[in-house]
Length: 63
Image (cartoon, rainbow, N blue to C red):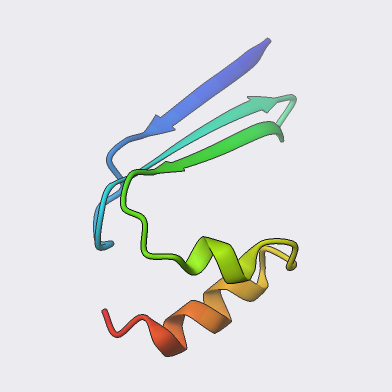
């Protein structure tokens, strides 16, 4: 049986974000993040390892 966890809105960030995670047998089987504030970071992060995002954006964001 799958469990769905929804965190919306995510606080402590600039803009609006929501996270939905589906867990089955103590493992994440599906995860989605939605954001409604476009700052353009998505364009130059496209195709990169998602773990790179935290290191790149924290240096240019200014928030």
